[in-house]
Length: 265
Image 1 (cartoon, rainbow, N blue to C red):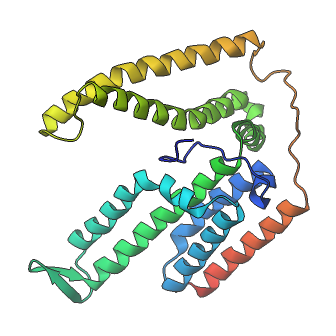
Image 2 (cartoon, rainbow, N blue to C red):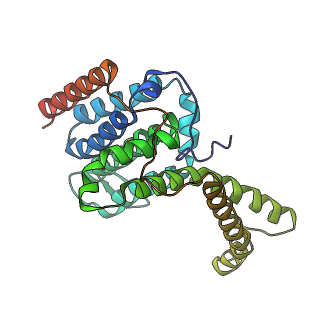
Image 3 (cartoon, rainbow, N blue to C red):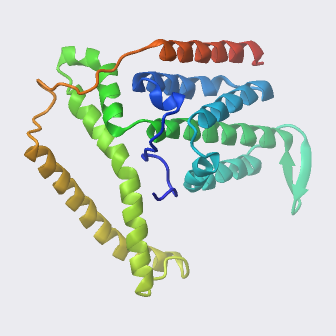
């Protein structure tokens, strides 16, 4: 499996996180995305970091695999930090780089925002790493069940979102394969001016779009061959249910949230 980009990939396992109800994982991740913005001190950020690392270790997926899968977003994290160092001019001057002053407020804000961004990406990626596309579809459909009263296409939306997540690693692998094939034919993506690099990407985009449309057509034909006609009258092989493990996880997360508000400034 290509682990250059882990979002959308699923790693089979028997860990506690794998056994959780997918609705539990989605609700906790959604709440974590909200709660992380309330951290405003070293202790609160430390608590969220410990919680995120424990979640990652509980999945029994090698942490090096998760970190390597986050390689594409490291550029954004570092760019966010550097942007704050350049723009923010709060606090005392800590040091100078080529006579350019770096302020204490810039370091604090840049580190906080970069850490927040890293935690969000890492925790949200654990959802697809430990949950199959079918479970994600069922969880989204179950959570959006009240919208059916206003005739909202809940099942179709859930299916579309899960297919989109599933195709992210597929398209990344296809992009890597096409880029290597083009590079073997003499196409250089790394050198030259910006205009030349953009022109070099064109031979990559055309076969990528053709491959994506071909895969979409094959998927549609496979669904039609199996008699798929939407969400009406469909049954499920496995019904989602909340058991004791999910309740314990909810309680632990609630404890973390309460502790966060206690220790924050």
